[in-house]
Length: 527
Image 1: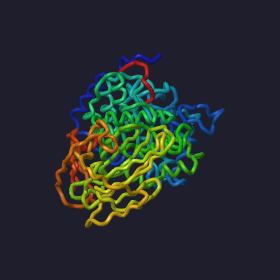
Image 2: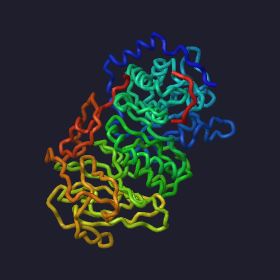
Image 3: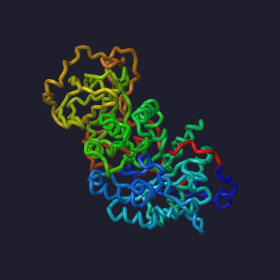
Image 4: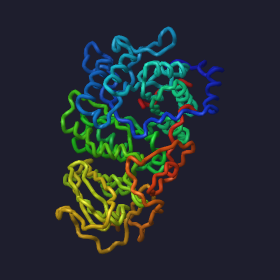
């Protein structure tokens, strides 16, 4: 039975809670791009049997081994930075001073020493706790100890705190999560703050207050835990597509939607589905936190996780989450606006996803204009998995991709071409005849064109307006990565990002988080 919670919200707690609304919160300046690293949970769960399974149990040995491999096997070189402990690291009781402590049989050197080891490799150290009486696995939660636990994490030089929501009331989270963030900020140590706040509220029938969430958390879970199966990945893809108009506006530098861990190289996904997993998380602007045994990872899967071109899309500094722009008869097209930006128009990362199971590749033939890409000088297009270079393709030129069935993708990058129009360079076998009837195409409404599917009149299945809507051009500059600068905004908005040339943070609704502004119910799940 969970312990009753009757004394945690004392007069002192009340004063501190009120302070979160009066004290200017710290801009921690973290997670300007989605965090990348390694996380224990999905692959190793809560295996605490170090007697019979010392190779796989949750222990300092496991985390040191993974940290070593993040460096020696090249993951650090492509951007993976964090090594994160998840649930089950704790002892079942706090120490005599009310502080959290590890299970010293499995972490004999203590958490500060583990963090020091990880830091010695040039990596960063993450840890897990829960806004509840207990963690999801039944270890001590933070209720009644918010300031103490924040100070403890700072004393251990923690760089990343994940706060789950088991054994707590969703109605208390609007107060509790910002309050703990306040205490994290008060320590003066920059720590990424990862929340499970909105998913627990959504599942309880509440509508999450994303304004508060954005200003309190660097990232947050808003859907189910990842499981080791294609069905699980597909359900996340569906959720992010079906709810995109609600959740996309909340993402941006410093604050990200988190669809959960990467399971590439475990047991449940085929090679093709693993490629899809990586491509879609790049389109989602999602944190890339591998949960896999790096000791046994096969080279093909390692190559997916270390694909620099796809990681570059994920880490794009504009920080605009992509959206589904087409879904018909098992074929989906997803697009994410990325740099460089030129004359008021974006470049794009595009994913063609085939969810059919009819056993043969599907040919998708499309013009860029039909996808809303209408930059007259054209786009330099590259396939990000097979390294095929399409060269410069103008908006009216038709090209085709063959996408394998059963959850496979083709992912391309379309960089705006800066220069005079030139003849298309496109291999004959990948070419297709231009359409004579240009009656319709997806148009760019700012983020990227989104017209709901209709009745099949479009060559890919949708009916669209007869004329494109030109986005407002506000600059004629060619925005390069080194030109991008951010400044904090305290008033996030939820409008679609306009097409721009000179990047203006406030126009995208980006706001760096301002961290800092009880119960006994069963856990919903491990968040």
